[in-house]
Length: 151
Image (cartoon, rainbow, N blue to C red):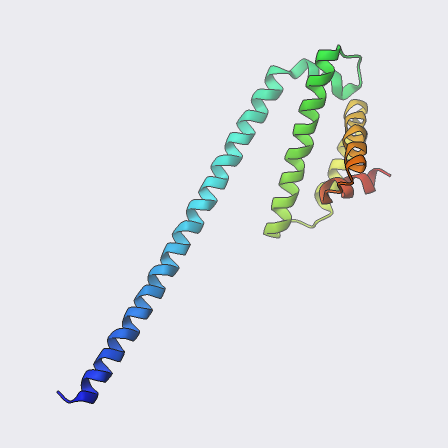
């Protein structure tokens, strides 16, 4: 074999190795993406199960709090904690949906504002949450959008 044949063969082998490594990297990235998506779904399931458990264990507090009924100090703290968990869950859902491009941005805050306005206790919890954000100089997009619809 001549020197140029060895050179061409070496270049061809080098190119093939680069292509093979790029294919491998692409397959690995696809597999990692699928694994991440599966983990997100599992985390969502865990969150939904935990949310259902929380409401089941505190159904009376949640129902009385939503209606704006008088609560004991302990039940008031429970209700406010559950309400904040609820708002945080909705905020997370909103952010995730916006990132994925699944929704029209205004749909979730508008719907949430309607829910908040329908329950006196939830509205009071919302006002407390919003005033806390204002005091901290914090303006999360979801909460700001909901507040905009409530005003």
